[in-house]
Image (tube, rainbow, N blue to C red; front, side, top):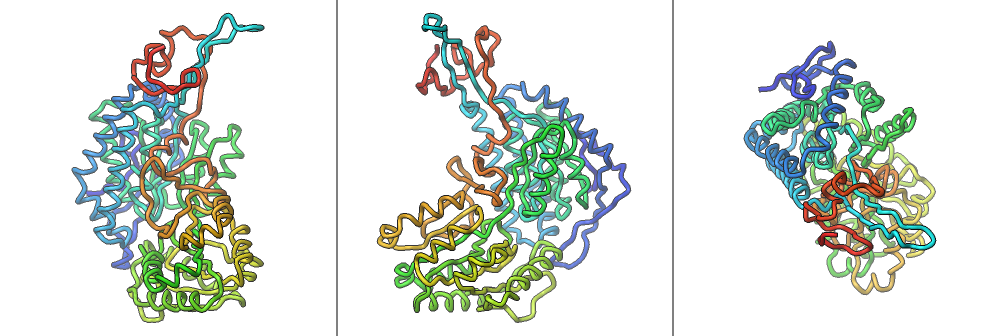
Length: 527
């Protein structure tokens, strides 16, 4: 079923000598297929193909691009059973999670297909000429978004489908008119290969240019470096660790032509709990957060890694209830032995601090590659004075920060680094008395949640999945939802152009019937 080769455009290639396998963490053994790491020549060939394909694809009609995305969906669903089987064998995640993530992937592709049909995403803006303006005539200016060029997408370890080969980065880049080269994640190279085969089949069916999509295998970091350094690559999408994301950012900025790196690098997603809501619902909140912390073995970028509250009897009751609830949950399999190893190393490093007290630690024996969830507690002042306590522990762990008073709690939030999410659990009365807390939190996060849990990212136009550095490299953009297309485009203005030479989106008669900003008014009317 799997061949282990690279897709260099529509062609299979395996010229390299580096061979690797994926790993089944549940069975604690390697999977069968051998994968061949791409050579530098193969990487460069993929980039050349991607650039030439881009020159053609960027001018393909949006209806045809929309159909292309829909055909990708059809091809994915034709091999759904194979994808789910390989996904589970490479991740240790259950079948339900695999099907759910495939559904999300399909939903994203369909959403971008619909966006292309509407056409408004190009942000067309027209300011018509005024030849009689004094002292100087006003020129005719028309602006819209155009695609950047070939995009490299790095597959994410924890989302083999929704954030990888045909995930949000790829779907949005293809919708924008960019060609895509995926650097497949070595932990789920088989899943990536199957998904790539569906995309390549869609390319052939729809007659899209060869090279509009490539899938590159690698077991180390050099292939990713070669891709980012290739002068034909114009942007990068990445989901992963802070160290890797920062390295890519530095690499891109050192190029002769620096390029944007849109990296989502995780966070600890602080959760602020105020006393009144605990008086009414302490045990229920604890049970919900125990589930959130351990969901998917804590391998979510929105995992609630820091819980902040005010020192009180009710907060102590909550901590005890949360500790009891989290220990009642059976451990689950992590994605890979290396991820489990890093989880244990980082957890032990944090709890070894003199100021940190372990309040829950699953001590029973577990199967190989299964995590042991834990909770720790630290005082607010100690948390403020030790920034190392803010480091993300990728796995089922949360640090509870106990503050002496509201002033200290707000100081804790103020000194936190950038986060994807921030959550406030409070009564309406408490929020009315602490409106400034929302303002403080807003400066630190991309999404504020009221009386909920951060795990679970809805995919729609109003979702912001990003945040101030180091949660992401550019807080102005989202990695989720149709607005994520804005990462792969740039604006261009046409001045005093003949109408017939303008793109359809900017022509007087508005042939695409899209919403445009014309002389300061949003309208679909002709000019």
